[in-house]
Image (cartoon, rainbow, N blue to C red; front, side, top):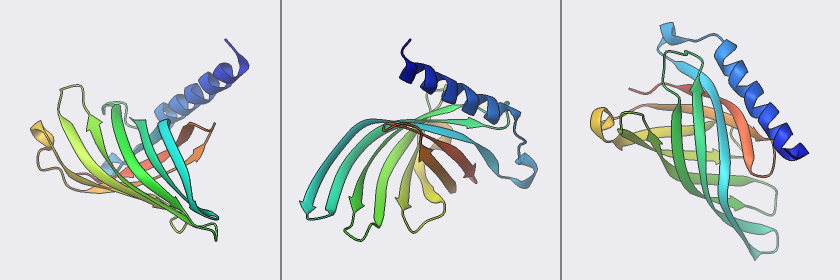
Length: 156
């Protein structure tokens, strides 16, 4: 195993161990956990000097602190815009995939002006057909294509 894969494996293992060892906030109606995202596609174009746009496709895994809850795999797509002044924003959609085969859809938005990024449930299939609520998340890069952080969910 090369050193990059070893480092990535160590970081992901550390994140998962941290998720499983952290306390839950189920009593407050809020779920918390760890999020790890991988970029599958990043198509960046400079539309003017210092002004860039990017099309994004990726996958995320959310690992709840409450080990009785399900780990969820999500597919995400979106667009990012980077301005010459250094500010940026991103918006997109995603689909959570559950072991039962049910899905939950959501929109998300990120930006340099936000301390936590936001997502809002927009529906789904099966028991998530009328999903509402949402939450916040924040992550930082581990490599150019892997990000790790935390989330707080208030889904209904």
